[in-house]
Image 1 (cartoon, rainbow, N blue to C red):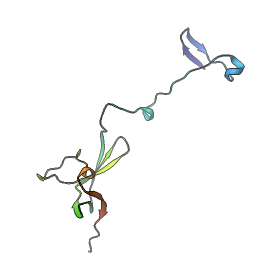
Image 2: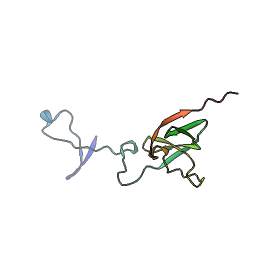
Image 3: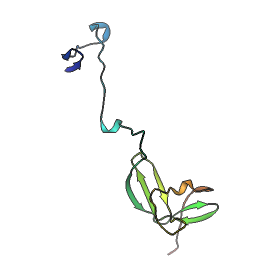
Image 4: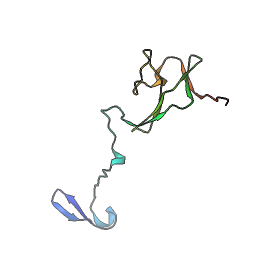
Length: 107
């Protein structure tokens, strides 16, 4: 297998460092390895809130959506004080947030 070196492309020696006397430094750059340290996570998907609520200060606040982010996290979204939906407003950051619960409506 050819590898790029400071002396141009070279055939990679087979074996270990002890048997060849060479050290081969490689890098692996694929999409799964990339981490953007200077950007906020981006929204991948928006899912309906269903019958889930956020529990804030003992009160159940209905979720309007779940947001899935590209950093493999997910958070609930509720209406803000003005009755608007802002998908970047993570309900978990509200003071006294204690978790999520599912409303079990009797039909």
